Length: 229
Image (tube, rainbow, N blue to C red):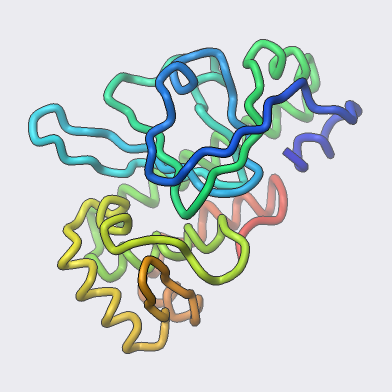
């Protein structure tokens, strides 16, 4: 939101309701499929798709302090069904704004619209990287990437996250994730404690996940606003 304000001559955001939502509880459909936009102040949300056949849930997107959701509202479109949007890494704090008020506030500002276009392109780059990661890399590489992404979107170095959370984020299984995070700890990349993972060595995590991390983040920093660590 700070980047948007910097690109407009308006100094007040539209009327907004401050909300705080608990981690692990899906956000009500009336907000996800309704007429509202969440502008994140603190925390992370994951977008998940649930299989009707197996019931298995896979994460397909992550948004934190760098963005807003649902993106469909910005495009005047509606999300497909079977999506879940779930706060992660602790309490989600956000501004809840009516879509019509937000779009009226944007108005005809070419700078702001250009910013939104860049943000949508950032999301596209990140999703392309996610596809490559899931197709080309093993569990340890996928964990390293998602930990870097979570770290970029939180304050400090300690992530409030369980092995089961990580397993859902990378479409794996908790026992496999547990083995891999212990291996990452042995390498000195992270430190494990109950319900938490502390990031110790980002450079090592970057080396492990390789080409699937960094392109989207660099695009955001170069074109929108400071981002990441």
